[in-house]
Image 1: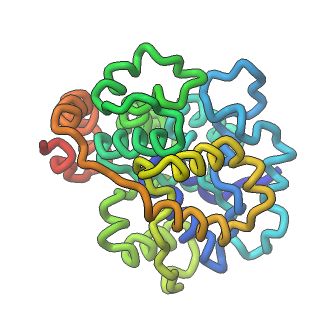
Image 2: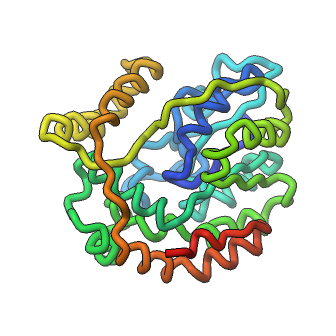
Length: 294
């Protein structure tokens, strides 16, 4: 039974894809090519599921352990699954199956995270509401068990989601990163992270092109390309090598547009998240006041 040395538990749309590539590039770390196996969130679940990602996740132990075939004895094993933060049951499953694992969370301004999520689903043809504020107001009427566009707001309550981890695991097992810090001080953040994982912090990791960029397609052919990519992503994952996939994605992403978040939506989200952000700042001892500025 595989005991991962570390898990990147979230959050969605906060830089987990970039972390996945940076960590995979370190020679003393083994991370499966597949991102988001989500095993500890959905282990042994059967249909009907209670979260949209469950149906495409790895839910049996044998398949999960198989992800780590090829790892060397001297490598630290880990994986990246943002569902572990979003799905409350994951914390207890990790406690039972991997109690000594190191936990890493990267967090982003929750309003910006929600807007990025919305633009991603617009890009992929799953969100049909052209107004972000209208999509926010429709969150409660959407079926959260099957509709991925129903989680724009709920995924951003980081204090609520991290609370069980801080109660369950030793605080020195948990490392919190901020999206903006990774953007402005990538080398420093990675050096700190490598020390936390227990690998050589001096290894230099090449910068990555932006990945999983959100935005709205500028033409019908581009919209159809993203719809096809999303519909068959699991099949394509098995036949297209990761470097080629990233190159194709980078080419498509150059033609996306991204309008600024509407002021009305920003004000709504700041008000929605205010208490959670204030509590989170105290929990992780960070100044998050910038997240509450219009």
